[in-house]
Length: 283
Image 1: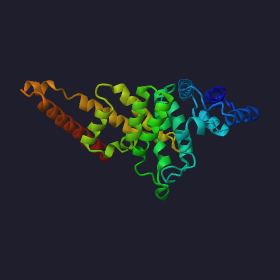
Image 2: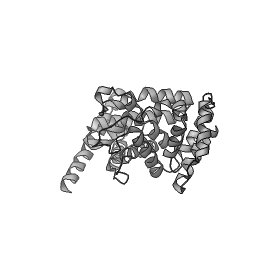
Image 3: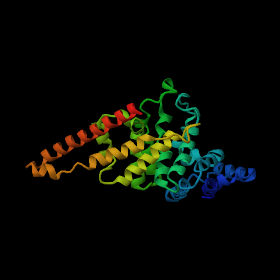
Image 4: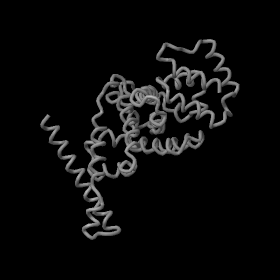
């Protein structure tokens, strides 16, 4: 636990210039070599991790753990992304591990103190470690490959259900969020449904915060705008404004109401998409 605690303190105090002393790091490496972190209680590992993800600079947590060798022991799925190349035109930082650190710190800036967003940021790109070597530096399908290691990590550390569930949605859907303006209305509605966003708008906000962190977590892009978030909020509002009462009044019932409701929501989202396109053309 001492290794985790030092790493968490680094996440808290790194913005103030804190660094782990060389002799302390040497001691931590020795503790890892001697197996002190091999059998830590999962609940305690998660408790420290959760706190670290809510600190101002969670990237320091990863760096300290990696430097002393504990990251590979406690978070092998995360450790595996370090050294994995990405396309430089999209990721000037190239290394997926460097990207992950930038995303974590962007998440801390966008949603200060929110460990749910922090966990989503931590695990959103685990699939990049599983990209076949002959496909690098492209990562086609990494959002689907990342689900298995995410589930393994969450199960091992006994991560709370809501953290794990939303993180899986971010893993699967962050690319769709980035290309929100290009999605068909039916696809937008499906995404809102997967997030249960019509009933739980706060969940959409957490999802969008994590996606924005991913987009801004690239070298030289920390201040980029993320208009996709406003568009997805507007889409949620447009879909939610369509009420089933009108279809009941028309005499529909059962499955027919559901189909009519879906069609009307898709139509509302099409109107939003058209208005967005016209506004962009006019601007």
